[in-house]
Image 1 (cartoon, one colour):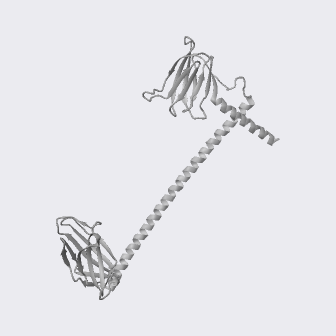
Image 2 (cartoon, helix red, strand yellow):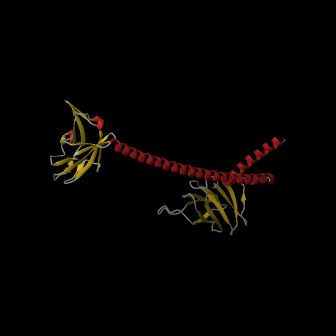
Image 3 (cartoon, helix red, strand yellow):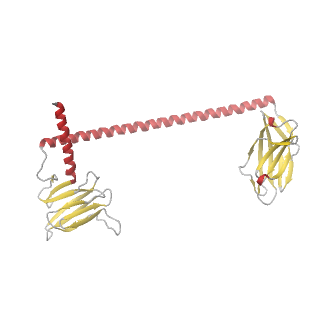
Length: 333
């Protein structure tokens, strides 16, 4: 019995929901001379208002003007019908309609722009002394029991929606808080990693310095320390310093000419017997571009592994221009 009662109730709710949806789109307003009827419209949808007499005059509070683009409603009349269509998505206005041969009756309306599922499609107007809303099918009224069921169902639906919104707000709040916590933890983790890397770098520098002090600093005097070629000067420090398995050689290039000088690269090469090899070297200099204006100077350091150069090898520094053309050279050892 309980299952049957639940099934019947569900059927009543379904039918009632369908009836309610139809009623919300097709309504009847009984208006007296001092009453205002509410007409709900939707952007993109035309609402038809049907009057019992021929329409004579229409006055809209926010009539759309195609010349200026101002206004919210397009209004047309045909015999006893008035057609409304909003051109904006939200807004309010009002409307006055006079009917009869001499304009005997004046109807007043408030116009409201609502969502698609709330807007009126057809509004029937009846002359009366009190405003009322009837169903879209005259003569059929839902029973009191059905009304009560629909009312309770609406209350439950409102309560369900309210509860769902609260739960959604709580979930969103929790998610935002979790995202904030994760972001904060990630920042702390990155800061800790940066600190560890900085400490390791400092330790590495200290260890290299200690090894250099223990092993001692070796010096090799450069064979050549200065050369001038093609309006540039190439100078080397007279000493090549070696410590902690690395050799360091400081160089200076100066543009002695009156035009801009551009060189392609610095090349460190060793000659063993009749063979020539390029020595891998890191170039550290005061500017990124190999470009010098008149009178400008570049100072840099070449860093390379001293084990790459044998005892009897001849080591030479080359300055090369475009297409690897030699511009100048200096013998180091």
